[in-house]
Length: 85
Image (cartoon, rainbow, N blue to C red):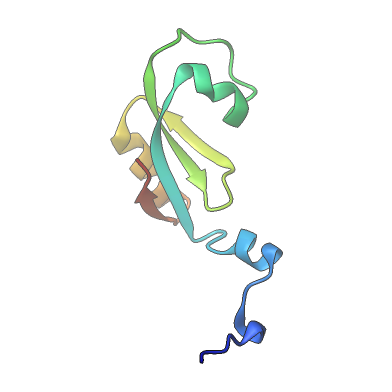
């Protein structure tokens, strides 16, 4: 019988901060979905795919029509990137 040592589990706050300032993820987003992540953007033509870089906690960092610009943005912020599909 296995027992779980609950002392080593992360709290919700610790989990939310995991990777903060170190890791970011990039993914394609459609312009019609941008309002939730980038609320300050003006309305855009629907159906256009862009690249976005998000902090580990989901905060938006960079938006571009070119993937390379996202990678440059990550380097400028000294972040390791992962890609979400």
